[in-house]
Length: 315
Length: 315
View 1 (cartoon, rainbow over the protein chains, first blue to last red):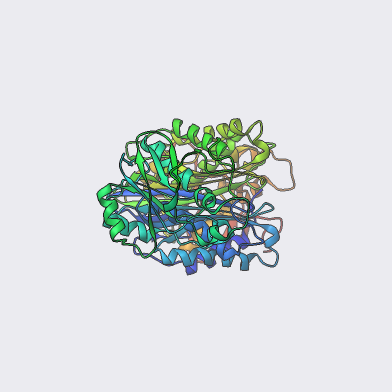
View 2: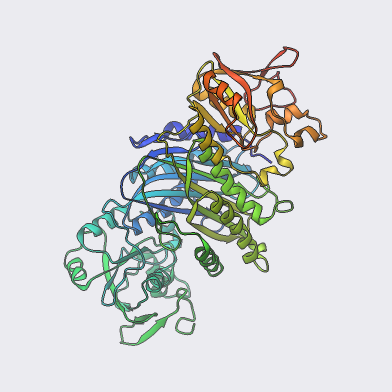
C-alpha cells in the first residue's frame, strides 16, 4: 500500500538541494511541514491540480512545460487578486512506467520547469509530496501569496458604469500558449499602482465564462464591443469550424487579466497604457445579470453563461 | 482538454455553502484565491496527496474515510511540528465512472469526511480545485498551521542522552486504523506545554524509518528497548509471516507522535503522563548514526535504515 520511498527520497533530496532559500523561510523541504515567517496583512491561498489527458498530454507537452504550467496557473490566480506570490507546495503522482528508465530525468525536468518559473517570480518552493503509481501523471501546486497594498482585488467589486479591460490577446491557447504563458503577476501589480481596480479575474475558463463570474459575484450585467475584442494571431489563423471571434470569446486558458475600473481610471489607462503588453477596453458594466455582445453592425447578441458555443444566442 | 465544468461548479457551490466560516477568513471559496488574515509568528505549510490503489482502495474505504484521511495526514504533519492547523486547500480528481450516478453523492460524502475532521480540529477549508477525469481518484490537501508558542518542533533537535517516546501503540494500521486514526494535534499541544520537546515527527513511514529521519537530521544515533515498544492489539493478533514486534517497528501509517526530550523531562512524563492516551519511553539517543534494538535477552541488533524487513540485521 505504501508508495515506493527510495526514488521518492532521491527526488526530494535533489529538489531540496537546489531550491532557492529565502530569508523568511525558517525551515524548507525536509521536515514535517515548512516553516515561514508571517508578514503583516493578508495571506492569499490557492491550489490547482493538473491531470494528464485533461490539462496536458505527454505526447505534446514536455515535463518542463508541465511543471512550469502547474505553477503558472497558480501564479495567475495570485495575480488576479493583485497579490505577490510567496510560497508553493508541490504534490506529484508520477507514473511508474516513466520510472524505470526516465523517472529521475523526467521528474528532474518537471521540477526544473517549476524551479525556473518560481525563480522568475520570486516564489519559494517549500515542500510537497512525491509519489509513484500505476496511474497517469498528476501534479498539484498549492500557493500562498501576500497583498502588499493591503487589499485583495476580488470578483465582487464591479460597479455599474465601470469600463471592462483585458490584457494581451485571446483565443487559440490550446495550440501551445497554454503551456508557455507568462502569468500576469507583474502586470497586476503595475495596474494596481496605476489605478483603482474594482474587480479582477484571470481568464482561465474563457473570456465570457470568466466575465460571468465577475457579473454574478458583483450582481451586475455587461456588454462587450465585438470590434474591441483582442483576437490573438493564433485564433485568427485557426482553420476550424469556429470563427476567430468565437475562439477569443470562448477559449479557455488564456490566463490574461480581465478587470473593471471607473470610467475616469479607464480613460487614464486608454490614454496611457502602463503595461509592456496590450491593454484593451472591451466593454462596460451595466445594470442586469447578463452579458451582451454588441456587433459591428450594432446587432446585440446575448452571450450564454457557460461560455461561447456553436449555438451562441440560442442557449 | 478542459475539464467538464458544470458538475464541478455544483460541487464547489455545495461545498462553499456548507464550509464553516472563521473570522480570520476574509474571502473563502469562490474567488481566485482565498484571503485570510495573517497572525504574528510562524506559518506552517504542508501538503499530502492520496492516490487510489496506493493509499486507499475504493473496495474497502468509504468516500467519507478517504476525505477524512487526506486531511488527517496533513493534520498529523502540523501536529508533528507542535502547531495548530488553520486553513486547508482541497484538490480533487474524481473518476468520471463515479460521475454518472454516484458522483455528487460520492463527492459529497468525501467532502463530509473532510468537513467533519476540519470542524473537530478547527481548520477552515478555504479553497481548492475540483476536476473529473477518466483516471483513478486523487485527492490532495495542502494545509497551513501556526505555532502559537513561537517555535516549531523539528526533526533536528535530538540531543545525546535524550529519552525517546512514542504515543499510542504501533503496528497493523493497514487493517483499518490508517483510515480512521485521530491525528495527534491536541496531544502535541499538551506535550509542548508539559515539557521541552527537542525533536518530533509523526510515524507515517514506520517507527524505525521515522526515527532515522530524526537521527539523520540531528546527527545522532539511538537504541530502542524491545520490551518497551508498544505493540498494538491488531499487530499482536495478525497471523502473517511477520512478528507483532516487526509490525510495530516497521508498519507505516500509525500517525503516532515520536519525540525526544531531556532525561529530566522524560522522568516527568514517565511519572505523570499528561495525555489521555498511552505514552511509552522506548529508547534513548546516543552518539552515532544508527539505531540499535536491544532485545529482552540483551542481544543487540542494528536496525536497517529504510525500515524493518525480513532480512533485518542484514541490510
